[in-house]
Image 1 (cartoon, one colour):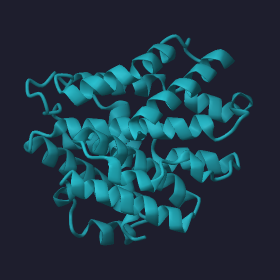
Image 2 (cartoon, helix red, strand yellow; image 1 turned 30 degrees about the vertical axis):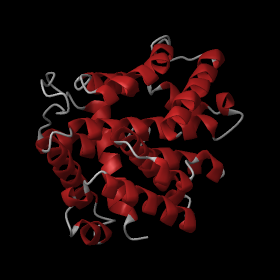
Image 3 (cartoon, helix red, strand yellow; image 1 turned 90 degrees about the vertical axis):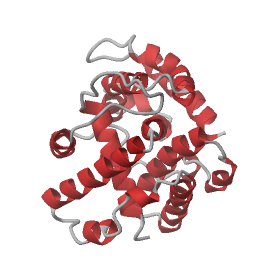
Length: 272
């Protein structure tokens, strides 16, 4: 159980940066993601109101509207052994991390352990465990009630991992993790209820993912020479078009339904 927090925190941080950082110019290296300044990471972690798919906001929102925990919405942990390519491992690390946050917020202990183990398995397969500080777990658990310290720890864990991947010419991996996490949280949010359109808070959160998705497509474009990133951008193309058909501050039931249907298609492709 204790390994849950640092893994989820890493995904929280990547999602925050996705939603708000200026990613800079396009990299010439096919796998190297654009540079991110550490002070910008800290500012966004501290100040940004977390968008979907961060565990702090999505799962808290689901709790507030008293939505029941639905295990079948998550990617079965039995699937973890079938992810052999780096692309599938990275996408599903993001997916399992979102599932882990969902389960842990609802205090689903066995499911939380299962998703933690699945995430750890993919972290090992991707060979990125070396990027995490050995003391991160203890430090986070010791500062759960200290927001300033948590911001510092989360910032460092994100930045160190991002730098680790880029120094090893694997920046595209971090982009794919972000994409998987974003898609899974949107999938959960759009499928948690059969009556989503009548819940104003849920509709607002789903509608407001237009800008984060635009930022996601922008950040993926920075490394689009990577074939895996190209394929992921193509998978997100229709969903991107649907979101960009939405007028600011409003969404129709047909548009919401289209988002729900298409994210299910994308997510199924990611987890298959």
